[in-house]
Amino acid sequence: MGVNLRGRNFLKLLDFTPAEIRYLLDLSKNFKDLKRTGTPHRYLEGKNIVLLFEKTSTRTRCSFEVAGMDLGMGVTYLDPGSSQMGKKESIADTARVLGRMYDGIEYRGFSQELVTELANYAGIPVWNGLTDQFHPTQMLADLLTIEEKLGYLKGVNFVYMGDARNNMGNSLMVACAKMGLNFTACAPKELWPAEDLVKECKKIAKENGCTVTLTEDVKKGTKNADVIYTDIWVSMGEPDSVWAERIKLLKPYQVNKAVMDNAKDTAIFMHCLPSFHDTKTTIGAEIAKKFKIKEMEVTDEVFESKKSVVFDEAENRMHTIKAVMYATLK
Ligand code: CP
Ligand code: NVA
Image (cartoon, rainbow, N blue to C red; front, side, top):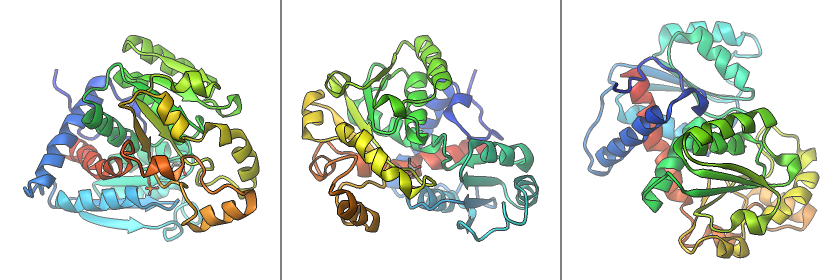
């Protein structure tokens, strides 16, 4: 039976079958071709979407805006603090108001429960643009990038280093299990994903002929890796007070030349961005001064190397988000 995602929410990859994810990746490739050849694709002309951000963003916001405009839609952006939501108006009431005016809602915020509640009341598709728990639109861009660079997904040895229980660690474990990639979280035990999610992913992985592994051993964990992936050590919404402990825990899990040399010769480096690979940002400079560490989750050498595909990955956010909006609104 064909895949039909019309009217669906996009809240987490756990809600989607491998066939549905495959469909979205193939659709993304089509949209990428249309963009590259300058072929107009204003397929959703007359529709309007609203982008609700309770945390800051560059890639996700711009991807939704450009993708929406390319598809011919009107786009409203509400930045953190500029709507009534949460302060003077409940999520449920906001959802019911926006649902009367728009055709789709993107939401970036804190708990996964909030985006779920928004979806329960809106009556129109809601797309999760990142919560503390999951970042599903990033997953499609990452899978598309891996397939473009390595030529396949099933059987890829994927290693995630760093805070493995944040939104990226959780989401990548789910994405790999769904699409047949062998997932390894290489991280200190304190930062491993929640046991119930690991259990669920191991079950999904078994159905799809792949594995989920958790290890503290960098040498063993990164051996034979096809993809080395990392993310910032302190996520949006976490207090500054966690920096000291996080640096101590994660310094041994920094992606550096030794890590890349231990992986396959053909291995690629990925990161959802933004990244602290130098001191050219305010926070990067502050941390350097306070903790005497100039590079954090990845060294500048690896970030700038030929193995790094981070900007192709960032571009793919736009093509994949376009596919999600088209599939759910068409
Ligand atoms: N990767 C990602 O979501 O980036 P932004 O925070 O800039 O949207
Ligand atoms: N874990 C990061 C991802 C940013 C795209 C954060 O939540 O800040």
